[in-house]
Amino acid sequence: MTRTPVDVDKGVRLWAWLLALVVHALFIGVLVFGVSWQRHPEPAPMVAELWADIPKPATTDKITPAVPVPPETPAPPPPPKPEPAPVTPTPPEPAPKIAPRVKSHEAEIALKEKKEKEAQEAKRQEIQRQRDKMLLDQLRQERLEALKEQRQDQKLRVDAEIRRRQAEQVAQNAQAAQAAAVDRYKLAIINKIRANTEVPEGVANGLALEVDVTILPDGGVLEPVRVIKSSGDSRYDQAVIRGILRSQPLPLPADVALRRLFRLTHLQIHHEN
Image 1 (cartoon, rainbow, N blue to C red):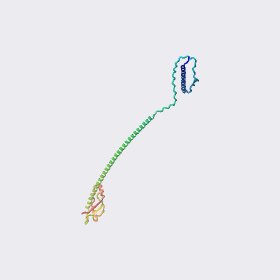
Image 2: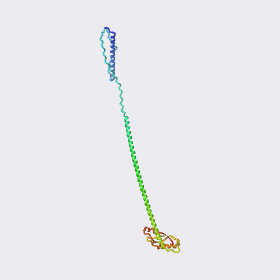
Image 3: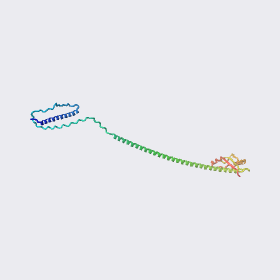
Image 4: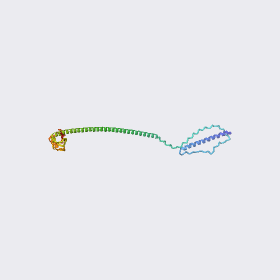
C-alpha cells in the first residue's frame, strides 16, 4: 500500500514526540541525579546512552496501513525538586533585650535611694529641730533660773542693805543715845565740879579750863588731874582742880559699858557768875 505524505508526516511527528519525550526524561534524570549528587558526598556513577543518529523508519514498498492508535498521554513529569538552599550558619538568637528593664530597675533603685535620702534628711532635720527646741528650752530655763537667782541675789542684797542700814541706824541710834548719855553725865559732872569750886575774887568771867580726868568705876578721881588747856588765870585753874577733887564720887551711869567711857574724861569748865 502506498504511504501518503500525510501518513509520512504523522510518523515523523510520532518519532519527534517520542524523541522529545526521551530528551525530557533524560533532563529529568539529570535533574534528579544532580539533586541526589548534591545530597550524597559520593554521587553514584551516571550512565548515559548516546545516540549517533536518530534511526530512520524502514521503508518498504508496501506499507500496510495500520490503524492509528491514539498516542498515550504521557504522565506529567513530576515537578522538579527545588534545589536546597545553601546552608548558611544560623546566626545566634539575640539575647533578650533587658536594657529597659535594667534601666527601670536602676531608676527604681535611684528613686528608692532618693526617697531614703529624703527620709533621712527629714529625720535629721526633725532631730535637729528637736535639739534646737531642747536647746532653746534649756536656754530659756537657764535664763529664767539666772533671772530668778539674780532676783534672789538682788533681794538678798536689798535685804542685806536694809539690815545693814537698820544696823547702822541702830548703831547710830545707840551711839547717839550713848553720846547723849555721855553728854548728860558730863554735864552732871561739870555742874557738880562747878558747885564745889570756890572761884577767887577778881577772876574774870568767861574763862575756860580744859582738863583730862581719870575717873575710877566708883566715881573716884585718880590724881593728878591733867590740865590740857589753861584758862589763863592760874587762880581759876587751881580752884577748878580743887573743886574736882571735892566732887568725888563723880556721877556715873549705871550701865557698865557706858561707865567705861568715862575712864578718861575730857572736861571743859567755863567760869560764869
